[in-house]
Image (cartoon, rainbow, N blue to C red; front, side, top):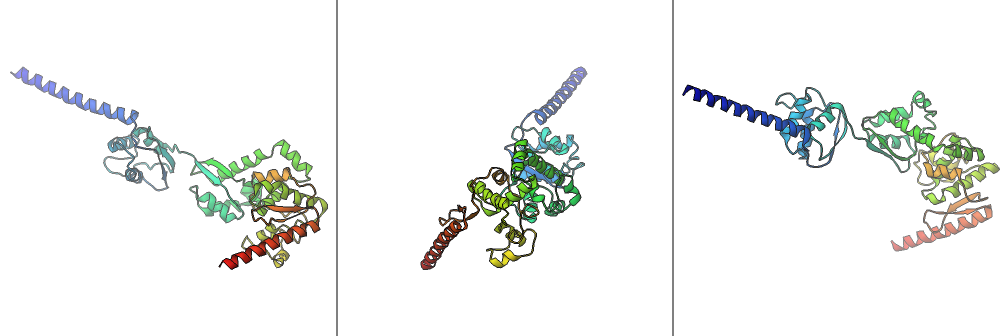
Length: 356
């Protein structure tokens, strides 16, 4: 009888141990091998966030299939102590992507080790003010706009890239760049310098030389072309006009340079504005301004290197009001085009007034 009791106890203990071991083994297998997330999601872990904050984010998004598995993984990686949602080690600051195929242990290790997913830094549109550029960058990365502005005005920092605070617009080529959300401004500048250098192939350097321009002069003229129009097909024609003026010794008389002098606050440039005292005012000064007036982009830079238009020296807005221009080689022809535009504008304004 005693032997039977002992045997029963041994069997019961064995079953319990086997069951516990089986559960433990299954949990380990699930935590390490089984997908534990419902759908793809991006999360941002900010400085001073702890693991409790991350758990709350994932809970609100209803992303975790088996929360217990994820909690075990966090404890395994020392991100969670006991049953308290207070991390003994904070997750690394960063931008992370959780995939449905991810296991609990992978995501825990991702947060612990900072296995970030890159973000796209999109620099698009017209970039003609440092504040605009700073906001574009800071709105897509962790750093604030003041940090970006300080870098754009840091002579020593920019000198390492061959630029100055005055010509820094030339360093930035509008495009989409892959960066990490937590990257510093140095990384952003590295990306810009790589893009700038890649543009300046031996062929493009030869084209600049053929125009009698340095690389920075090409960028500066391209910034004026970009400021004149959003209609890319006409960039080579506009570039051709300004190059012709440079070659014959005419002042550029480019309205965008005047707008730059007033920080682009003018709705319309009047004759009095063209008399402003500034080295950037191409109505008052011959040749190119000292530095780019905006970030021109590759289309405008290529236009300066590959101009069209023959001997054209003038252009004015088209009376079709479609964003294009009329080009002319002589001043008399230009006046004819200008009068045509003025007549069309007067008629348009009259029709608008009559309709009100």
